[in-house]
Image (cartoon, rainbow, N blue to C red; front, side, top):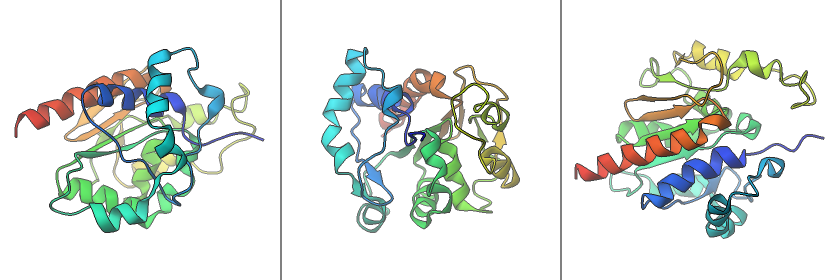
Length: 217
């Protein structure tokens, strides 16, 4: 058995920097069921991250249902500044086919909002299909070639049955990294990172970008 879901470092580190910058989060899942974390990867010795996790613990346990967010909180007058999609192999399950995820992403681009993601999180971008508004975006993401190696190093119990990077490229996304180094990339208002190593860097990049945006208003 392999416990998959959202990777805590990829979730909590970007959230930490945005929280410190004064931004708050509404946590949502497709089903409205609790967030599934890969607890084996929890940074249990980092008191700052543990504090952030405790702050949002109740929302992680009882998140909003994404369909309800789409129905009630999106629109021309929404006060959301962006959407954050954490990584972890759990992002490969459900999000690429989700109509609600598609609606959120299309809303974000149409309303000039930020889209922030890393590692396997960009698999959610597959939900938009052949949308010309997304074709041509340059992003960082976890490389398919490294996913193919994860069973050999004992990280995954078996090989994935499909390659999300390959599918993203077919839709016109340009993945700028071929390895993992903690790299991040900003293309317009799409901010992405390559792996858990990018969690800290992506959080700092996002916090600055969002603060700069607020400063314009």
